[in-house]
Image (cartoon, rainbow, N blue to C red; front, side, top):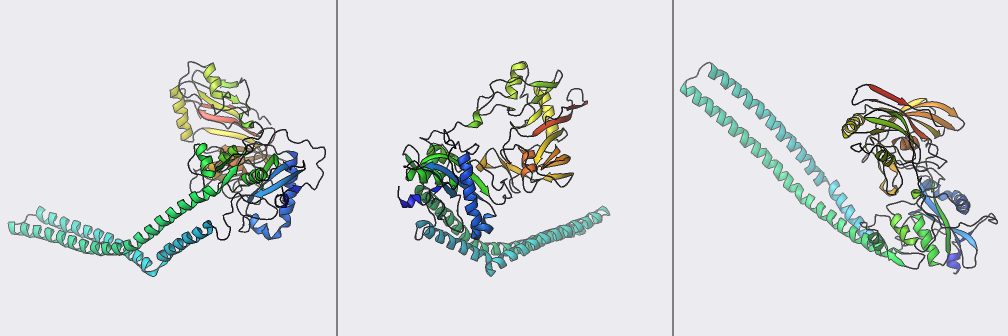
Length: 545
């Protein structure tokens, strides 16, 4: 352990005497940061704030991480890291170096990157060339002309036919009938000659353009091939270690996890950098945390200074390998209640509505935790069909509909699909909303890098709309009623927290805001047409908070 490693090992500026060390290492995918991680984060935040040259870049958002560790002399300190690059570099003196530096001068990555860039420039040069653009314009003009020619001839042929039919209706001689037939044949032949002549011109233009298109396609194929080869070569440079002293490449780690090739950027996040450096230089990892600096991106929800779990798609396989040999906290995601007794608030012969507590699954998940479905299956063994008509998030409480027959289930599902079932939620939000009511329209899709989170995406998202009304403002919080017009996963939670939505996360939302004793979101009212009696049914329960 020499000076090279010691320069990245930061001693706490404040005394840590009396603070109990963590008994186990942090479970990185769901955690409450240890006090030492919080103190380390505070010091990193002060350092970042002092780097004025970075402020503009970091204001756009960046994930940082801290790792509290013990050196071979028994001293307690911490390492810091950032994801990706800062100011065009993977290396900065305060932060541990990357697992592999893609930007090293003279490296194969830079050389191949320049070659790929040259290909991009050539493609762009062709696409912007006057000859290529002129051909494209000429083709569009000629296509339009051919279409107009067809329409014009179609009208002429129809008018001529109508005239001939009229003449025939008044009676024509044999010679006149022959003349009419010759006229029809001549016009059709003339149309065919003109159409073929113009289509021949169009085909000539297309053949001329095809020369350029083939060159572009060849360049793109070369770019794709070189990029794939470069990616695979890069993956081989990322060699990770774990606490047992084993090592493996990115590709090997992802193969062990029975996953396809690693995603782009895998291995460049803060958490793998921190553990890698600790292992290589014989430091004992004690706890870690990752936090966000800057504005929230437009797609996902990130709050400045808040802690976040490690990402799933890039980091989960890597960290599962790197944590081997450490005594890691058990996952809080699998801690579940051992029994379940749900309150039924409305029931008849064909369906029922029950009150789901927060922390209970609607349907079985990956663990063996009891769910609403397991409860009703046991209580109504004679029931048919899927039973649970819709779902509430595990953290959300409130009214849930259950059908006792397959037919009733299908009928209620159709009402949901047609948006004729009315639902009302109540929630407390972090922040004071300026408007008393409004609508939020943000398309939603899964965030594959941070499952089970959802994200906003104009390209991939499904339409999602929510109406809200303010009920009460108390201190720095706002109580609202939500009226979802669609039923996307995490719709209310994302619409509340997102910067383009209310920018006010629901209290206790550990996915999009800050964890508390519970998620303050309750489905308190539902209105629907009974599939059997065809009467409107309204069920409402008191607010829990």
